[in-house]
Length: 288
Image 1 (spheres, rainbow, N blue to C red):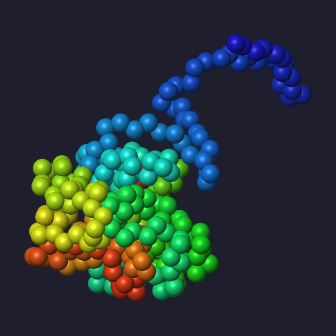
Image 2: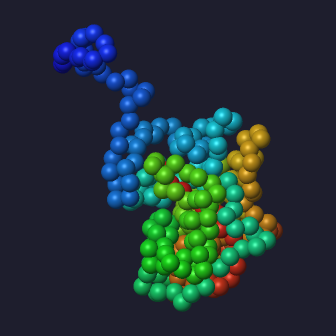
Image 3: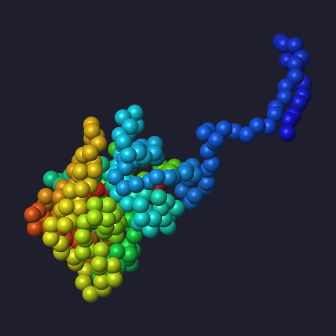
């Protein structure tokens, strides 16, 4: 298709103009979709792999591109745990730093918990099926937005504070959130599979008689591998997962308590719930 016409201006001679249809270059073509939050660029994902760096522009790589800003490391490609239900599903990214260091910590909540707000996980099967920390985090924020920082510090540090300090490409990812215990669980399985580590928790997907899993040193080995993945990138600034003696909050609820991933060197780790006024660490995740 082409269009033609005449143009005149008091200060220039009469001229002609024309427009011809061409195909835009693929490299500069961007497709947008409208979600319930904002217009978001539809990106094409290929070659996503555990251990890759994830950058602030939404790209990822297996080598450190020092011209970009790394903000996390990909720890799962299991779509159900990568926030597929919220329109993502390609990768789950763990932040390179704690939002709340082990030597300070924050409480899960300083408020009375609405027991009907989040799913009540009463056994390991339910924990494994709690797949969306993004949903948990948004549910708390939407209910307590006006008192979010005061009443839900662990959620605030992951969802508000960390998103402010470590900007993510919000048009192509979820932004940072407090991960669910199911997402923590899935990460342990993904890393165990990558390094052929025998991991007994993987046998507990349908365990409905207990709400606690106690481990030997395997969980320390698994999270040690995550530290090794980050440490394998020369000149990368990151904070180690504190596997020597640390407890990380999840966004998952359990009968007035909240679930954590706990590390106790050299005796192992525990997936269990704790009183919500205890002060533990926060490691944000995002999905793309």
